[in-house]
Each structure stands twice: as C-alpha cells, then as structure tokens.
Image 1 (spheres, rainbow, N blue to C red):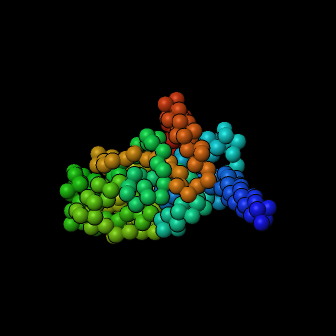
Image 2: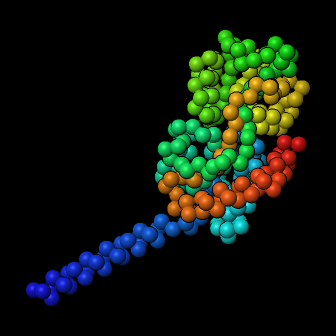
Image 3: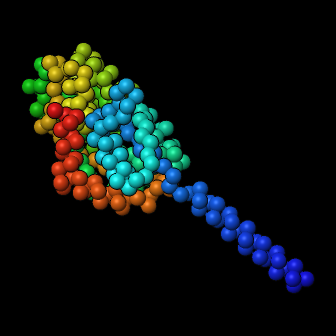
Length: 255
C-alpha cells in the first residue's frame, strides 16, 4: 500500500511538473506583435500595405537589436485593439496617451518618448477668429473616433465642446474643409501630417497656439508573454530620445 501511495505521489508530482513546464513553454515570447493606430500618423503610417511611422520604426529598431522576431499590424478600432491587448494577441502598442481606460490593460513605458499636444485644425479663413478654446464653444467640431487623449483633456472636450466623431482622419479633415465642421480635434503631429499628406495646406491650418497635454507613450500588454523586454525597450526609447534618433525619425515624416 505504501509503495502504491508513493508511486501515485510521484506520478502526481511528475504530472504537475510537466503541466507547469508546458504552460511555461506556451507563455514564452515567440514573436512580438507591434500594433499601431492607422488613424494616428505619423506614429503609424500605412502605405501600400507597408507599415512605418515614428512609433513603428522605433519599435522595430529596438526588437531588431534584441534579435526578437516581430510582426507589425495596424488597427482603426479601439474596441478590437483593447480586446487584443487583454487576450495577449497584441504585445506592444506604439502610441497612446495616458488615460484611465488603457491603464487597466497595459504597462506604460514611462517617461514619454514624444511630446505631442492636443490641438485643432481649422479652415484658413477662420483662423483669425479663433483666439482661445473658448472661441470654439457653441460651434460644431469633429474628432477621429480612435483618438483618445488624457482624462482631463477628454473631460474638457466632452464638457465644453460640441464634438462628433468620424471613422477616418481624412473624412474628419474634409468636413472642416467643406465647412460642415468648424474645427477638428487631434494631436499636433497627427493633424500636421494629415493636412500635408492629403495636400490640404491651402485649405486648413493647425492652431499650434491652442495646446493641451501631449505625453505619448509606448505600452506593453499586461497579458503579453514578451513583457520581459519592457525595461530594455523603455531604456532604449529614452536613449533614442536623448541622442536625437527620435527627432531624426520624426523629421522623415513631417518635413
């Protein structure tokens, strides 16, 4: 009987150890999935099914240094992106503001690697009449629906401005050009890039004097098996910020 109990105990321990080893093996980082918001250039730029952009380029450079395989994908649906983060199907997102909803699912890599304040784009002929955020109260505005700024800024926008939402950046900009909306809310770099890339400089301008917040981060999914690289990625982002690499990559997309 003792021999039988001892055999069963050894079998249970062996089985538990094997299962743990299998789970641990499945949780190893096989490939990093890097995701970028397709409606937030120049962090993610999608042309001819090829992804690039400030955030995408930086992430690919860092994981190449680590000799870790990666795949880059673009999203334009916040709900799908958040579910991907929760499920561990997305490991890294390359650009986000610090807002409460995302902090439940990701580890922000702080400090920020980019400063990109929230501002507005307006028609050139109305620029002189807009002297402050108060000038927008009572007028129709628009934002791209995946653009989510910091909590305090979101609260201000929802409490004081009359905003509707478009699925795509270009559609939102076009609505300002046609006069359907008086202004578009977005990040300074997003609006600047969108206007330039779509040849709207003669119609629209970015109000850089109206600026709120602006810290942009990369983030790791809390469910990612690749979180072991978070400290290294965070350090390299700051190295790139300090040695001018971030600015050099930015210039490639803005000028």
